[in-house]
Length: 482
Image 1: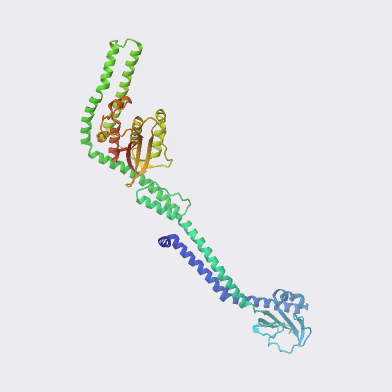
Image 2: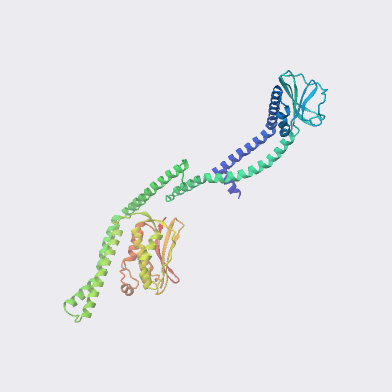
């Protein structure tokens, strides 16, 4: 937990969170200081303005000989302003309901006609109410005295109440702001985390990831630039892998060509002897009219056709094997989806599965990408699948697996229930024309070359391949880099 918190505050999101939180706290503190020290002055200025306006209205009413009550009454009712207007010690207008026309014994301040003075006083014995008050003493141009008073006793109480409210509102605002800033910081830094993840994958030589964040800002432009770099590097890596594989293969080209040539001649002469001999024998029988009826002739012809087809199959596989072992066939290394390739092979062999009463293996729809020559890997998996279908028990099971390995590769396994391979034969099954059960191999048309082609293809890729006996069957495998 401590490590996660430390990692957060070291991140951009954590720094943004801290900076914005401090800024919000500073603004709230500034607001509190304004309320404490500036609110009182603003309050006094409002009172002064209100008294000045009332004095101007009173002077105007007196100059026009208008009843002051009709002009000034709203100052009393709306703002609790006390008003006293008198002349030669005679009250002309007052807001004190109990005053009436009384004689004022107190001498007013010395104020010139048409001017006024403003002061603040504390007078609990005033006719206008006790406590602090702001008072305006003035005289109109006609020499009429005007006294206006506004209470100010609630200023300190209002400020204290406002500050208490600000304390709680500041706490609530700070908590809400911190939560909001936290999520906004994570939201704004999400593109940065995506770009960081993509850069980490690129550093690990994985160029398949693409930045998908939208927008037109600098981060979006950086993401598009990284996508371009990934595409270029992926293409370059593909070309480099192809060139590297070709270079390694070329180093052994001469020796492999000589060895393949001699082995090809030896195997061809051995393997083609039987079908050619059968074709010759049955052809001579037809020529000599040994087959006297239509059924015999049909049998002779079918044998010749089967052996000719087998010859064609042997020659095609031998040609592929010769090209791979001699280095004549160049690999085209690319990144392809193994899951999609296996799905296509299973669909192609679905009729054979049904004929053998074997259910189709289930594969995940999730893509599994690997590097290799897709066409040759398809031939490897076709040979494995065909071999499994030939040796699976009737109504048995065939399983296909895709598992990641510790060394950044994926292992493809093809398992079939049936009789395990004798241990003494396991090292030899990859040799050309090697057959464990020659009678059974010939029964289903095997040539003994399929696993040799698998070995040659995987050796050209320089990747592992092999076979394992299980308790209830046999499992072949290959590995490809991801």
